[in-house]
Image (cartoon, rainbow, N blue to C red; front, side, top):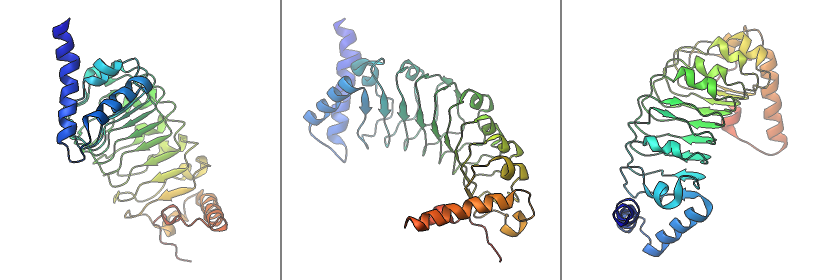
Length: 283
């Protein structure tokens, strides 16, 4: 028992202290102990930035306890993979592994309580199977993805925010099964067209497709059936307002957009990126 405790609890904890004390934003060992104590009592497991850790910290499981973790944030380190045992964190609602060196994920992620998953700014070339029925926000920006796991999106009935900007994805049709989606950010990929199936996203409010240079138009059914759509951004695509004026449903979208602009002006809120959709309007 003593050998197990040393190998699985004491040693990982000492490694954490050493990393903390040698990092660029070093604090005292007492501060680290307080962070661990906070994690044990609240379930908030926030690893300090820039510790240069290359593997997922075992203390989350062995010191804090898999059944206690509610939030895990290990951003801005050097992690290369997420281990299979992360699925033991069945009470975790947020898993943030942004700004690391991730190359590998488990075969699948099946964390039933997870609401937020952020894997942005890594080196992922593919996503694993995702069985995350309560997920609300999925962020995978700035990776090397070329495709999405099609069957996984059917399990994410509660997904509201999806962001996959700065990848090499060609097709996002699979996202159309996420009926709760309100915000889709797919800038600077290699998407060839906005899928007709996006018309099923009846709650969609914001769609950003900037930098997908092959896109030429927006399907008329998207304008007609996505009645909540009020922000559409198509900078650096082949789409122009002149082209879209010929698309059925454009006028209704334009009225919604103008109302939002007027509302912002009336409230003295000037959010330029929310008012500029990148379309050249020739009146």
